[in-house]
Amino acid sequence: MMTDGSAEPVSGGAGQECGVLREYVCPARDQMFLLPVSMREWIPEGHLAWFVLDLVAEIDTRALHRRPAGAPGRRPYQPEMMLALILYGYCCGVRFSRRLEAACWTDAAFRVICGGLEPDHATIARFVVDHERALEDLFVEGLRLCDAAGLVDLSVVALDGTKIAADASLARNRDAEWIRREVAKLMAVTGEQEPDAAEALPGLEGVAPSAGISLPSPRLGRLEAALAQIEAEDQAAAAEIARRAAAAGAAAEQGHLLRGRKPKDPREALARAEVDHQVATERLAEMQADAAAREAARERGERPTGLPRLRIARATAGLERAGAQLTAARKAVEDEPVAVRRANVTDPDSRIMSTKDGWVQGYNCQAIANPQQIVIACEVSQDANDVQQYEPMIGRLEENLTRAGIIDPVKLALADAGYWSEENATCDGPDRLIATLKDHKQRRVARELGHTDGPPPPDATESEQMEHLLRTPQGAAAYKQRSCLIKPIFGDRKHNRNTRRFRRRGLPAVRSEWAFINLAGNMLKLHQHRTSIA
Image (cartoon, rainbow, N blue to C red; front, side, top):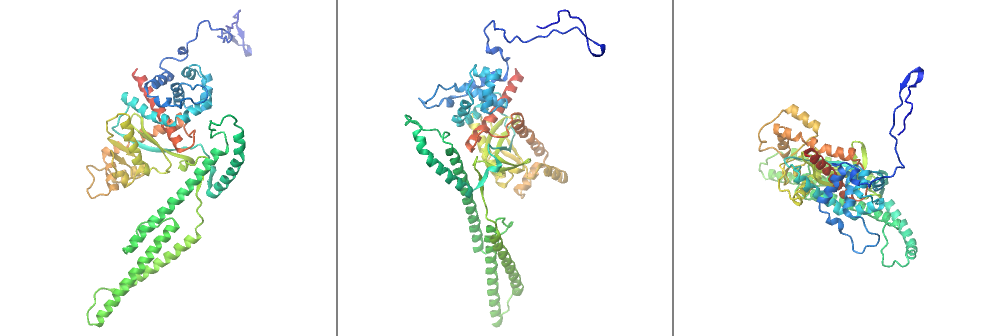
């Protein structure tokens, strides 16, 4: 302890006195511990680290022990310890393996979880990769614990999605020709290095080399996956155009003109113009034949009926319009630039997504939350839009509830206008309120048209029925909960837990990570609940 023995007043600047010198408590870094140290004294009772350790002891971790017998290498760390380490890190927003390794050296809570052990970043990363599926399945285990605590309220649930960046750059999207050239180069390099690789492993004939040792191999696999994605998209687009052309041909055989918007694809627009021109030609031929029959009847002294001249004039004008549209469609196909499809060569499973901040290379992450903001279902999609995700997410919700042993049914599901379609409004599942317009437009329509009451009219369309329900006092009050249920979930994941980019690449890895992220969020809610009732 440092002190001033005289404790005399000390004069400050400008002749002012500062008073008696203070006594300071100084660190004794060279002092030896006189008694044994207990790790339980490093962090207080009720700390999140103790809760995570108790939590891991409650869940089923048998899948984490599945390891090939006699695997080479040193003895592995206890799976429960590794799970607690990663789960606590995710709860604190520390997800990367190198930061987890550093925390095991410097952070008291991490040292307590590891019991003084310091697993390196490669061991942590391999544990996540080797138990990818098992870590994803732990989401249901966490849901079972939340249900036991009374946090799984299914009176109303809200569905929404958010875009999260992949571990890939937006600038790494390449076309098929570039990918084929790179594949040829890597194949040549790999062929030259294969004899050297075989000579570099003497005496290890029975040990298969790791895919990460040879640098061209992982890159070659990603390039081939990107090329396969481009070819699959080309085949799907050609099949869709062929299907629509076949539907147009069937309509032409029945003599019907196609209705709806003009297709954006020039080839599809050409097929439609050809159908319209064919139908117009056949109609004019039929009317001319009918006019000839009427003229023959007139020569026989019979009195014809109808206005054949007016009908033939309209059909002739329609044929001229169809001919002009066919000529314009053929010119559009000739002038169309060659469509170049691209795929990301770093993460071929990722897609280009539109966000409020611009374009991002990532995934569409879906989640369903309840009034306690417990995520009860989550999934990752490659679709940029949400309209195709409603039925799969409801199916995933029912699957999770069944696996967790929760028998209570979902009473009401809420979704925004991104999920609206007649198929989603009429599919099997719980009662739902799906907005047909964006929120600000929905509120404006409610102000202009006013509130309604009672069931919708029996002759109303699906869209009109849903709008009627949303403008009832009960429907408006129920739908008002949607943003309060699901939006804070994404804010917590992205801002508080620093989850704006996935750590690993590939759709299976991203699905596992997204499920584990939501597991950590649910466990934080469970910790807050147990702390509040304690």
